[in-house]
Length: 324
Image 1: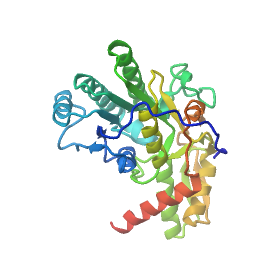
Image 2: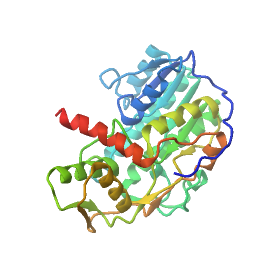
Image 3: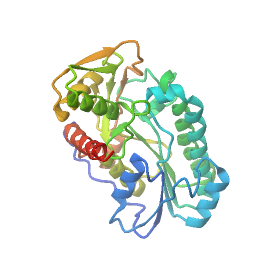
Image 4: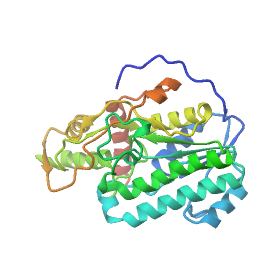
């Protein structure tokens, strides 16, 4: 992680204290981190599980807004997964995320919600976008085919927030996080992102004394990673201090190859074997690094270094693995 810059924090323009705050998707990795971060913030945290409201259904979402009467909404709910899940379930990734964004954003307007924050994804940027990717790179080229369905839905959500600001003057904003990891992540080899998938594989290899671990692709793509607790802190920071049409990148400003990531996880896990790269599997985009100067200029920067964060994620995984 880069040495922190010294930009002073932008003043609070929308304090959360005293507000009724709905975290849509509170059981997910990001949503649960936001709930943790809001503890002690002086606001009333509102949540609703799928049994109470299917966010893909417009009538259910409108009824939920009427019932809870939130002042603030964090849209962290999403259907998510890695390359394999995206390729196997394109319709779900497109439909579910389009409906979640459209229903929550429009219902928030109808209910008079004072402020809403929508969460994007780094896959919204073109496959061969200039690196590091500034916010203006959006829609400047073709998307990465392996996750285009999810990306299209997320772009629609970002643009919907911008459109509602223009037409109805809604104070709706968007944040654009890099690749995330940490407590609450999904650990299954068919639906996981790269960090939980590697943690599972390397942990198993250590326990079974396997000489090597297979990794999808060449190991050469470069990725940036942010601990989910840092993201939650950034989202609260933006909710209280930012109000504009453009989405804001949230990341650490540094990247590494997938092979380097695997080696770092091996050090955390205590695995001393090697790695085999399955070149028949897709790599995805060659590089994804966010330009975070806009957020840094507002006065926010991450606190959790990668190795420290990976150790935290591994502890969380081991605790739950032992409970099975």
